[in-house]
Amino acid sequence: MTGKLKFRAVLAAAVVALASAGAIGTAEARTPPPGTNIVGGSTASTAQVPWMIALNNSNSSSPVGQYCGATLVKANKIVTAAHCVTQPRSTYTAIQGRDNLNSSTGGKTSKISKIWKDPQYGQVSGHDVAVLTLTTPFTGVTTLPLETSRAADAVGAQSTTYGYGETEGTGPANRLQKVLVPVLGDAYCLDVYAGEGYVANGEICAGYKAGGKDSCQGDSGGPLVLNGRLFGVVSWGLGCADAGNPGVYSEVASYATALTTQINN
Image (cartoon, rainbow, N blue to C red; front, side, top):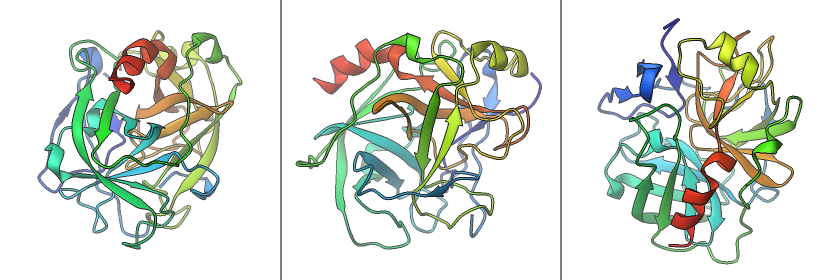
């Protein structure tokens, strides 16, 4: 174990120790500092990415309730990270179409009626995916299809991640951001995260070897998009945008069968 991993969910008001999968060890979520989402990115608009969901929680330490991200994959279904669903179901609110979470108006909102978390999460490494059912479907909103081919995880693939989480001072607080994070490949993350539990058959290594651009705390569960498909789910990393420590994303294609079953359930 070379350090403490940072799961990319906002810390709940009651401090929660999140047990990571398999050999990863104990992860820590971090409370976002004031005035700080995606690191090194730019402002995005839900008008262009209507499937982007803010998954707020009433137990979040953020004053606006910002907690995790998610992706609308069906009118009543969103995909997020398994480590984002540690709180009681009643505490979650999904928000669609709101660029600025500092505002309490605009867009659509829904509570959650059902939570499915990959049953292997916490038992073995990887499997950091979950599907939530919306109480009020977001009808008429464009959804994002799942990537089903593991061949998409090719070194150099130009993927983009989105979120409302920490910017570490590189952007406005609680506003939707995006950043391009090229795929670095399994070999790179198996090397730099040796002993941290990186799973080549189930995770995507994306970012920059020199750092500077990355997903961060509060972006957990949000989408990594490639060629108009949900390519990955923001999962974990060591710090944010640090040189030699790229972001790690759950590889949607590896879990597409299980996810599809839940989406159609």
